[in-house]
Length: 413
Ligand code: AMP
Ligand code: MG
Image (tube, rainbow, N blue to C red):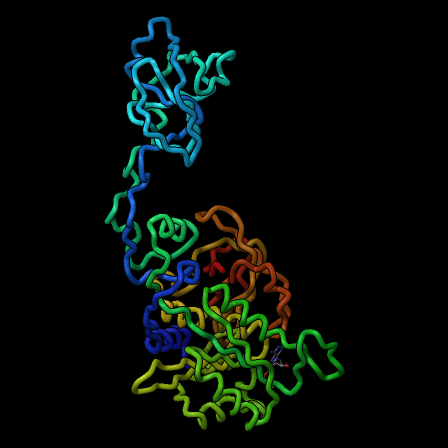
C-alpha cells in the first residue's frame, strides 16, 4: 500500500501526451490547440455599420447650424448589399447593421435620431437627423481593427471552447491541429452485475459503474468505449482486456480487492500489463490498481483497475484517471487535478483512523469564504451522497471529529 501523493506522482510520470491530429473544426471542440490558427481575412472585413440608421458624411453634420441636418437618401443598404455609389455632400444612405459603409460616408446616425416624420425615409426621399450628440466616425467598426490577415488569432495551447471555435471559423480554419482525444475502454467485471434495464434478482446488482465512468470520461472531453459486463471468469476477463488494450486507457471496474474472485490483477499480469501500484492509503478507493503496457513502437496503454464499489470507483477516477486523461490530452499542468481550497464545516465531519478520507459535500459561498456541508453518506457502495456533491471534504487520517465551524481542506468537483 502506498500514499496518495506517491500514487498520483506515479500516474503522472507514466502518462504522456498523445500525438496531435488534424481534425475538422467542430471535432476539436474541448481539445487543446496544437498549432496556431492564422487568419485569412481582416476582421471586420470592411468598414461595417454597427447600427440601423443613415450613413452620413461628418462634414455635412458638423455644418448643421440648428442641431438638425437634412439629407437626400440616395440608396438603401441591407446587410449583404453593396453599392458602387459614393455618398456626395448633402446625401446619405439608409443602412442596416452589418452592411458595408459606402464610399464617402464616415459615420452612422441611428434611425432613432431621425425626426419622427422622416424616420421611414428611403432612397428617393429626404431625412431630417438630430445632430446634437453626433461624434465623428460614430457607429462604424473599422476594417481590421479586431485582427488582420496573417495575424495569429489563437496560439498553440488554447483550449477550444465555444468562443475559440467561433473565432477559428471566422479566421477561415475549417480544420485545426489539436491534441489527441483519449480513447477510454471501460470494462465492468462482476458475475452479480446486470445492465440498468434489468430488474435485479436476489443477489444481483445493477451496473452503475459502467455508465458512471463513461459519463466521467465524456465530461473530460475523452471518448468512452463501453465494453460491457464480463463475469468473474479469467478467460472472459482476458478476452475483454485484450480488446480494451487497443485503447489509450483501459478502465476496469471491480475485481481488484482481496476476495477469491478478485481476478483482475492476475489477468492483467497474464495480459502483459506491468503493475505500477496496487492499493493506496485512501478512503474510499483503497483497492485501486494501476499499470501500463509499454510498446516499443506504439503509444502505451494505461490500465486502471478501479474498485467495484461505486463511490470508490468515482473517487479513484477523480484522483488517478482524471490526471492521466488530462496529460494524454495535452492539458496544462494547472488543469490536471481538481482544484483545492479551504472551507468552513457547517456540520461535524469524522475522519477515518488509518487513512485520509474524502467525504462528499456541498460547497457554497464566495471563493474566499466557502462553507462545506457534508452530505449524508453510508459508505463506499452509496452513490446517493455523491449525487449533487460539488466537492469533497479532505480529512487527514487520525479518526478525530472535526467540529462544525472548523476550517478544512476541500476539493472542488
Ligand atoms: P468488487 O470490487 O468487485 O469486489 O465489488 C465490490 C462491490 O461493488 C460489490 O458489492 C459489487 O457488487 C459492487 N460492484 C462491483 N461492480 C459494480 C458495478 N459496476 N456497479 C455497481 N456495483 C458494483
Ligand atoms: Mg466483483
